[in-house]
Length: 219
Image 1 (cartoon, rainbow, N blue to C red):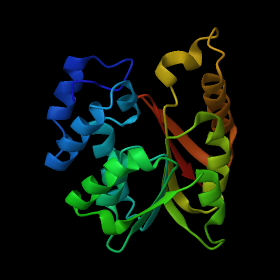
Image 2: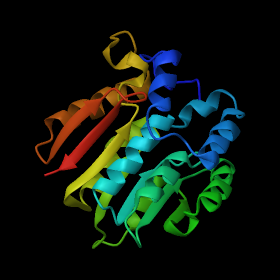
Image 3: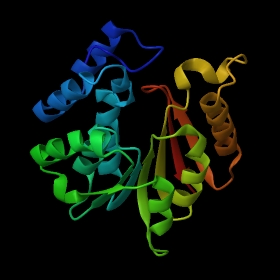
């Protein structure tokens, strides 16, 4: 947990803020360790403080139906599922059987497996297959950056007024302000951020949590 998952937050201050918030429990610590053993790809896992933040938001919004795009090894899904209202459900979209196989035992150990509907398929197909009368209270996007816009549109159209969409990696290690960075992911995130900022259907605040998290509320 010494890795802050952030380009602007040092290890010592990160350790302090985690220690002075709701700490990860034994299941979460074990999942952090298991994911860390994967090597560099473990950076795809959200930070403990972001997970605690997402649990609290889910609780405050009394979320009954949530969607996650990009599940990886399941830490963010665990955090959202823990905050759901009684009877609440979370649909998780991912394409990797290998990574989500790490998630399943953690969800079971945390007692949230019955709240999670994991669908292994391209996320855009899963989103488009949701019934037209689906009402999404909360969504989290943390997947392939060039598809952010499409995920956003599919989710927003099914989101209740006042619903909240969380989008990860919106600062992209600071590359969003580096004019020399013109790779596909950076260009996609810049375009997505600009689109959301101009979208009159929503209110948005971008916060320096993890690698940048946008909180987007549907009007």
